[in-house]
Length: 102
Image 1: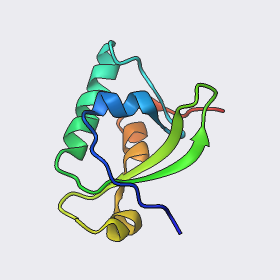
Image 2: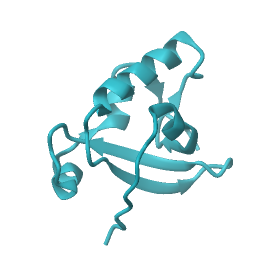
Image 3: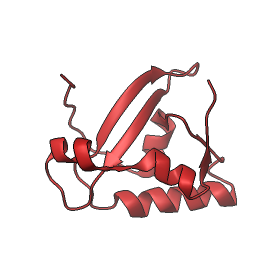
């Protein structure tokens, strides 16, 4: 049974420092591509509550590797988990991230 964790994300940049989206690698935030990725994620997740975050352990820097699912206007986390948009894949499809090889 997945553990439910509640909390508030202060900003997307705070989240990305702690959570690294699994199977993707991002451009540095201070680059043009990094700024595009931040804007994309900010727009995609605006008003989405709850998010479903599935962890896959940590990387060598102790950052969590995660899959993120969201579904606008859906308050039920079970529905988000089953039918939500897979943010990781969206970032890959938009060319805002590349596959991360462990």
